[in-house]
Amino acid sequence: MAQKDFSNKLILGDNLTVLQSIPDKSVDLIYLDPPFFSNRTYEVIWGDDGEKRSFEDRFAGGIDHYISWLKIRVRQMHRILKDTGSIFLHCDWHASAEIKVDILNKIFGRNNLKNEIVWYYYNKFQGNINKLAANHDVIFWYSKSSNFVFNKQKEKRDEVVKQIKRVWDKENSKIVNAKDEDGRVQYIETDEKTLDDVWRISMLQPADKKERIGYPTQKPEMLLERIINMASNEGDVVLDPFVGGGTTVAIADRLNRKFIGIDQSVMAIKVTDLRLKKRQNMLFSQPYEVILPIFDLKKLQNQDGKEFEICQGYYSVQAIDKKGLSGIDKVKINVKQKKEK
Ligand SMILES: C[S@@+](CC[C@H](N)C(=O)[O-])C[C@H]1O[C@@H](n2cnc3c(N)ncnc32)[C@H](O)[C@@H]1O
Image (cartoon, rainbow, N blue to C red; front, side, top):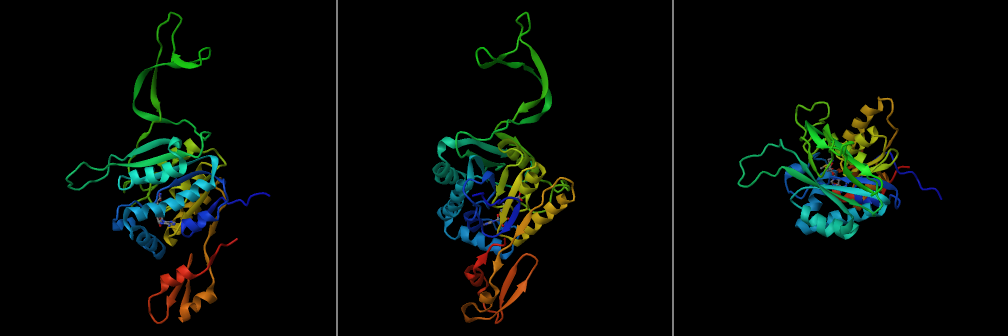
């Protein structure tokens, strides 16, 4: 039976529930930038109910709790990845050791660790601290099997350099120095080099007006361009389960990949939708669907014998306790959510 096409969607909801509904082996590439284990209040970006609830969930029980919160989600990601697929998990020093050992090595296998990419953002402002400035994030790249998509990438150097020319020696099946007829080593001048695992990419600055949509954890487009070009091909499905401001899906769309973006925050889905709609004015962007949970309104109105007023917003339904008692979260959690077609 043909598999339901699950691509080109923005989905509002807890990514665990959404991931559980995605078929096995249907996604080519996953990039995730989950909220870090930094316990800073500005990890709450959007400030709406969905995001705040997730923030409180994660920090309720310290690092062990955070790791199990993430682990059940990564297990689903492994299930939905195709055998040729890869995952890129973005994190920082707060939990990178635990994420590598307790989650990724266990689920993907330590032999499938391809690279520990260091994103070095040299221009972050640091206050007066009594230790070295933390100026990098880590992106763990794991493939699902030994047969995975990898397209070598080049990057520009700051200056032109003279290098020994290297060529493929067919007879001996290896790369060797190129030599002229007199046996002298040949040189080339180049301003490019093959991309390695340290990426010097500036953090987005207020001056980056064209790209910046204005919230603190937005990732630079160049970061996603590299990942998507490197580990997927045109027409592949790219998924971001913590889509935030939509960097991954916007770049996937631009690079002719299909995409799935998930976020628990109404604001994040709204911002991503608007970002994609801007692209929709451009000739080659793809149609996509925004999926919102449908609440059972009748059940919602009479939950626990209380009466609720239903406010239907652009992207959500809110149940507000008429007597002003608490219970909004309780109702939201209990309410059965169905997916739109
Ligand atoms: C660090 S931001 C992602 C930023 C994104 N990479 C970008 O460049 O725009 C993390 C996002 O994860 C979302 N989030 C947190 N917990 C979630 C959950 N359980 N399900 C879905 N989204 C969640 C937050 O609402 C937030 O938008």
